[in-house]
Amino acid sequence: MISYSPAEVSQKTGFSIDTLRYYEKIGLLYDVGRTAGGRRRFDENNLNLLRLLRCLRDTEMPIADMLRFVQLLRAGDERRRERLAVLREHDSRVEEQIARLREHQRLIRHKIEVYTAAESTTCS
Amino acid sequence: MISYSPAEVSQKTGFSIDTLRYYEKIGLLYDVGRTAGGRRRFDENNLNLLRLLRCLRDTEMPIADMLRFVQLLRAGDERRRERLAVLREHDSRVEEQIARLREHQRLIRHKIEVYTAAESTTCS
DNA sequence: TCTTGACCTGGAGTCCACTCCAGGTGCCAC
DNA sequence: GTGGCACCTGGAGTGGACTCCAGGTCAAGA
Image (cartoon, rainbow over all chains, first blue to last red; front, top):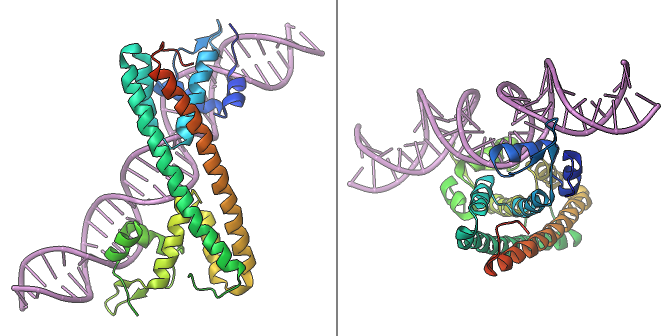
């Protein structure tokens, strides 16, 4: 099976090597292989998990929640429903997040228009 | 002119009273009135600025950048173009942010389908 | 064989944006 | 005039998520 060095994984996932070590230490990342000399070797499974963690992280899921999710993952099929629930709930939070951003963008764009129209310094 | 107590402003803007004080201390919020006894009284200008700060904050603008923006605000009309530039640039970052969220949402939704379809525990 | 760069560990340090605290004062209703 | 709540200040503390460090090891090329 193909395996990857920390540097390669860092490059592929955008997590720093320190972060990879940190995630492994706290249990977010598991089943990471080692060479005889003790160096990490990451496989496709590790990479796929990291890609999912990247998504969850970038959509504001706190580490503690990701940890619970990973525990459900490791618990196997009997907790599939719970994993599903976590993701569904998170998905709707992402939806709200996007809506909020759009809302804020509206005001920012309004300000842009106002400044483009060259008015006074008051914050109207 | 109508003015508001810290508690009212906190309620209206969603910033805690401590945060209002903090923002004033670091210079994000300026020209806040006081009663004879030293209590803050906020006016419509303060409120409008806070509303804008809320948008910038919620769209991930760091405090340091907001501070630069506020300095441009206070500098008056001659720096209107720079304010405009800051907002335009930020607007496009918000756009990217939304795009990234959508992208991540796609993977999350894919996972949801996968789990709904009841498969193994590997992170595929 | 030697060098060099990537990697290892545990633990301390950093950064950001607040949030809390102690000790004191203002103000309004009763 | 007094009780009690909202508010004041400077400064210390917090939480989350890394990031850095010292001191050592591994491994591939010259």
